[in-house]
Length: 391
Ligand SMILES: *Cc1c(COP(=O)(O)O)cnc(C)c1O
Image (cartoon, helix red, strand yellow):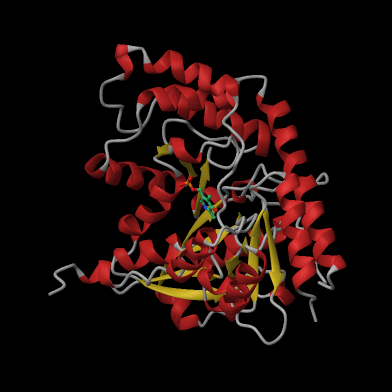
């Protein structure tokens, strides 16, 4: 008898289980599998951050429980970064909270605001945690379709008034995973006034705010006048500094939401290892930050250009994304996204992610993660070009 709670049984079946089996089978046959599935940076954390971590980990004063609201220097470093990067003033005492990776905060924010039966508005396709956190809190995720003809931005005015009126949280994510889309300031202005009108809290996931190309620099929703009254922004060191395994992120903005999150955390996880928070201070304050980021953007930009060009040569009609390390491309006619991904895995040994894994509206697309070296990417694209033409 399955004695697990309903919230565990509610979890969607692991979509990639079948693909994982096929990867294993291919590898057993001796096929050289190239994995472009997972959005986990392949480059190391910068040396200047590692060095600081080595020093901090040896300090006994860092071995005790961290303060509930986080290490002061880390909150100050985040506030200083938001001021210089986005022109946004934050009170480090009330408007910044460290997180054990932004996923942790994104999953927990529903527990702070969503009562059983409340609606949260979530993007589809989207990062699955918005909807799962909603379900865990007993809420109802209401999907907002992200469609190509709307630039993969939700059409807020087409959300049924009944759903918008019952909604508590509005999740947004730009630059966007999985579509690579970006949002303009005008879109964020519209979102802020929509949130005001329906008394919603906007949860903006800005994990890719530093991964952008060709003079494009993503905006923070907090740059909008009055945004702090309705918005909390989640951000992370994971993608910015190649630190996914370290588990360090933060939320900034609306002080009520920030305070609710850290009160929740006080009762659940007691915060982040102090040494990691000091390494985070180093990440943002060391003068090597900007040169490091310039190199990182160049790395992903070159990889993006390799993939976009190869897909275009094979008949795909796609534009290079302005941000993120993903390419979101339509599957050729006659395949579902799952079928297409299986087909190219079996035919070429290249693994990509089926769009359906990110929601109903992800059907018809697949996602390529630019998280392997340029030579391997070229090899993968040669194989795909040899196996399939779009159209
Ligand atoms: C990678 C990613 C994150 C970051 O997660 P962490 O928990 O900070 O590692 C958040 N949101 C999206 C959309 C992501 O792709």
